[in-house]
Image 1 (tube, rainbow, N blue to C red):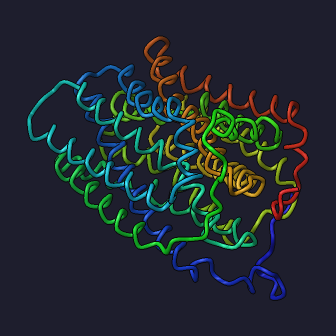
Image 2: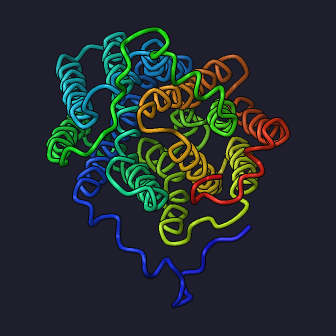
Length: 417
C-alpha cells in the first residue's frame, strides 16, 4: 500500500499542472463550496429547529427520509435528463429552486408557525432539486478536465465538500444562535451566488445519449451497474456501510442531551468529520494512491465503523470531536477510491444514468441512514443506535471484501483496471 512521494524532485506530482487552469472547473469548484456551505447551514438550522419544536428523535429521521425519497422515486428521470440535456443548465435551475426553499424557510420563521409539516414540505422540494442536480453535477465534472487529471480533480472536488462540511456547520450553529433569519438568509445568498457561477461555466463538450426514449434506455444505468461488478461493489459498499454507520442525524440529540453542548457544540460536532476528511483530501491532491487501492478502501471503511462506534459510546465532547474527525478521515479515503473507480469505468453517454443510480445509493446511505438512526434511537436510545451501527459497518466491509474480490484486487486508479 503506497502513496506517491511528492518530495522527490523527479516525482510526476511536481510536474503536473494545476487543474484550476481549466476555467470551467474553477467556477464549478467555487460554486460547489458555496452551495455545499449553504446546504450545511440549512442542515444544522433545520435539525436544531425541528428537534427544538418537537423534541422527538423520530422527526430527525423524517428530515432525512423526505430528502431521500425524491431521489429514489425519480431515479429513472434524473439520470436520463443528465445524459440528454445540458448538465450545467440543470445545475443552475436546481440551484434556483433551492434558493426558493431558503426563502420559504425564512417565511416560515417570520410567520411564527410551529408546525413542522411545512418544513418537511420544503425539504421535499429540496430533495427533488438534489435528485436532479446530483447526477448532473457528478457527470459534469469529467467533462471539465482531461481524463488524466480526473483523479486529482475528484480529490479537489471532495475537498470543496469537506471545506464546506467544516466551516458550514460551525457557521450554521453560530448564525442560528444569532437568529433563524441569519442562518436561512445567508444560505439564500450563497445559493444565488452559486447559481451565477454555474451559469458562467463555459459549456463543455458532452457526449449525449442519442437513443430514443424507452424503458431500455431509462434502465441503462441499472444494467451497467449490475454488469460491472467493480462499480456494483463500490456503490453497494457505500450504501450499506454508511446506512448502518451514519450518525449525523442524531447529533442534535448528542449535542443537547448527552454532551450538553448547545447549538455551537452541534456545529462543532458536524464540522469534525470534515476536518479529518479535508486533511486527507488535501493530501490526496498531491499524493495519489499508487497501489493496493481496493485493499486500502476496505481498511478505511473498517476504520470509519470503528471510530463511529467510539463516538457513539463517548460522553466527552473532546473525545467525540476526535472520533468524528477520525471517522471523516477514513471515509474520505474510501470515497476518493470509490468515486474515481465509478467515474473512470463509466462511459460518458450513460454517466448521468449511472450517477443517478449512485445518487440513489448515496441518498439511501445518508438520508435513509438518518431515518434508520432516528428510528433506532427512538426505539433503543441514541447510544446503542450509533455504537451498533458502527459495528455493522465493520461487518459490511469484511463481507464485501469477500463477496467482491474484483474490487478488493484493484491496485491502481490510473485507468482503474
